[in-house]
Length: 239
Length: 239
DNA sequence: TCAGCCAGCTTTGTATACAATGTTGTGTCC
DNA sequence: GGACACAACATTGTATACAAAGCTGGCTGA
Image (cartoon, rainbow over all chains, first blue to last red; front, side):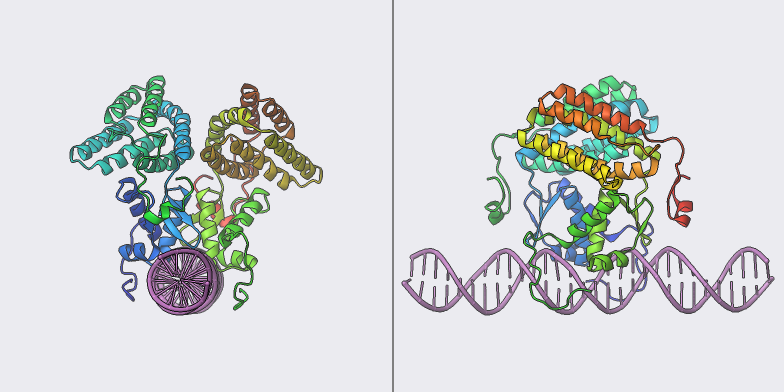
């Protein structure tokens, strides 16, 4: 499974832990909706794909479980998480509590370099959208929110938002009503302008509205086509 | 290291994963200030204490690293985390953002059983304090905050608060100015009353003040007697 | 025919072995 | 005497082996 004996062949310059690489790859796949909620994540299978042992895969899955991207069931394995509607509501309520304030702070702290980076970000988003790569666009739009939290120099909150974004991605996969232009880059564009001008009040307001729009674009009343793995669907909590 | 062959001897009724047990034990020790910030957490050593292999210890440490109770340095091992003063400020700012609102919601939702449990909680806190077990009192006072988040039916936020409480415990260990009656149960008592009466506005206000008091009881200006492991101190970020 | 049970297979849980890295102490050379 | 180099040791990183639990499918007996 690994080239057996080849002393110090790879020499990762950055010493990236192998489990980080795997966790990142899985996370990306989930964010881009290539792995859908409910998908079984077998340890051997993943290990084969990335050429690592189950030890590594396990560590990666544990990490993803902690941010609730995957759910681990004892002796049954790991699955891409399927947030319930209640959880979905909680996630968006929490975002509505954290992000507007964070946007405000970001607006007051952003440097030119930060603004430049945000603009670049949006350009990528557009490009992905134009290329029809909806998964990638969604992922990038999530990164946009995380980036703002980073600018606000609130690493703690940024970490939380990262978790919330991750779950949002799952929630959108499950409950997105229309094939909406979610996180339509229009809203992001307006946000950047407010941040560039240092207008905290406005940025806060824009962020709040943006999140409310996202929230309302979800159908949290009836179960919308749950794409869970067949027999697993029958065991899970709420039908 | 484990009783080698004894088929199904223990039969944990709840199927508690072994790593959960270890993580819980370590977490408790940190919360109770029996393990101080900077302490090296050797894998073999911990494994011996709890009679498990390094596999389990590793999983436990990873979990604690995720909630930032411990810091893992590649190829060097795990240490009880030492939040910087900047991080300390962030943690309390975030708590001040999340908890008052949560207390408000808890006040509107609390059942009689919830209130009863909270009162019981405070009684334990008092008992620990009277017994001179300051570490245990501190731990219990943290649980109090988590319990309130649970009552607010916001599992997501409750999870975040749990993390924040954990780090607060480290912060208090590092930066507590006076041997203050931190989280003096007086404030908790008033909070319970507001919650019992369903007075959300009041609860929110009390919680906000309570947190500000806690925050101000910290000395975040100069480095207060850093009990870090000797040579490690010289490598770390800020002196 | 169908419910229940048991055997074999598959997958996860945990321990252990080995490799790689970091640390420490000693010896040598200048 | 002090700085560097290197070897012995200690600790972590990863792979693998084995044990335990769950799943599947076929068998049996009503």
